[in-house]
Image (cartoon, rainbow, N blue to C red; front, side, top):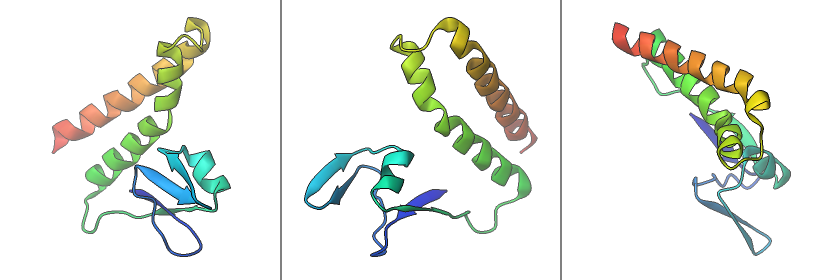
Amino acid sequence: MTQYKNAKGEVYNGRYVVVDGRRYISPCRARLIKLGYKEVVTTPPSVDENEQRIWQLKELLQESDYKAIKYAEGWISEEDYAPIKAERQAIRDEINKLEQKQ
């Protein structure tokens, strides 16, 4: 699981951050970093290798969600989105295989 903490030790709650009295609703990773938050990766305790790999793959999938949204809204062409779509499908296929092993 990825968390974001600032220098004061405050953790991003997943909904919004307040910096200098200004509220940023659901900021992206880049915005959080610009606002002084650092990425802290934590893994759940006592997780077997399959579960940990599934967790990592879901994180990868989540990182490209914004590209899928841009495509759905028409900001990315079908041609430009094709390799991203293939990569996302490969990740989902691997997740499905690992989940079947459990």
